[in-house]
Length: 401
Ligand code: ADE
Image (cartoon, rainbow, N blue to C red; front, top):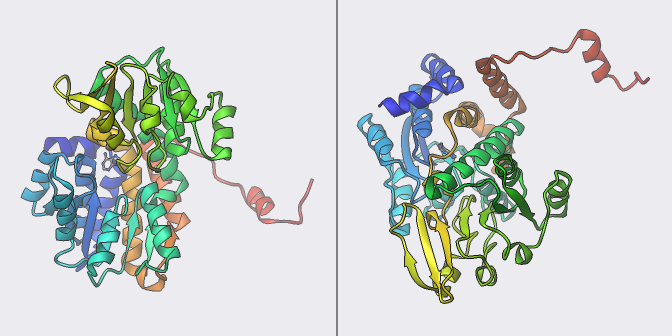
């Protein structure tokens, strides 16, 4: 399919890994169940895993983000795909369970719904897996702390290279992309309130500021709030930001960040978008309760909630992750590194899972460095190497000034 090939041309790391997997066959005889956003970039990953000998089944990691034409193309290729855009919650979880039906040796998750389904349905045989989001890693750590995690999981999200390219650049760009595609609004001169100043929030803030917005940050973490302040962004409690914001973007991983008390004071025409994995950040029920009518006919992915006093608040993508519902998620250059780290970690797990305990493990640092190095090479960027004297200096505690 041309769109998958278009993405693959911008994914040199994955193309190289696919060639490597064809000759090394790291997944021969293994089944891999994946729960990922079904996009052109995911198709490139799935094909690479299959080229390495895996039998792959795929379910969507969000009920609204599936690109149906991509799902169909993968299905015609013989991949076991369980995903359709716009399914209800019950069907969404049925799809995830179906991806596990024939058993899985390894799993790949995006948000933690696959891992939690493995554990609640008691599917045996999983040796380990990888998680690619902040939200999913937080869930996994809670499971591990409860003693509930039954196999090792690699926190592919947490490598420095992935965090920088994916969370900062990928989310930063694609969230703005989703908001612009949905609304066709001008961001220059607008007051944009960003809830959460983690890697994703910081990436979004930088890009909104670059487009000429006045950016306000809200935070609960003093270190992150300090970081935002030191980068020149005003930091306010949401209660004070709510009446002045024109665009609200939530990137916290938390719940009810925008609630009834904020809806009550927001300006007419305010745009509400969620950049977090789950649709819990904006209290949509509070909007529904406050509204006298909902108008959905102006543009796709824009629901105008009309309030009793005549104000209209524009909720994007039903409060679901805006970059994947209203746009296409991260561009392929970003997913190249994110999926490259995932694919290298899976190949590593295929031989090493048995040596790990049932806990959350970091990506082996050499894999992160390898993926970053291959990405740099593909970008044509060259770097220095340490001289012998520098290596000796850095390795020694005896040498001072
Ligand atoms: N997560 C964010 N962007 C994505 C993309 N393009 N494909 C799959 N998962 C994603």
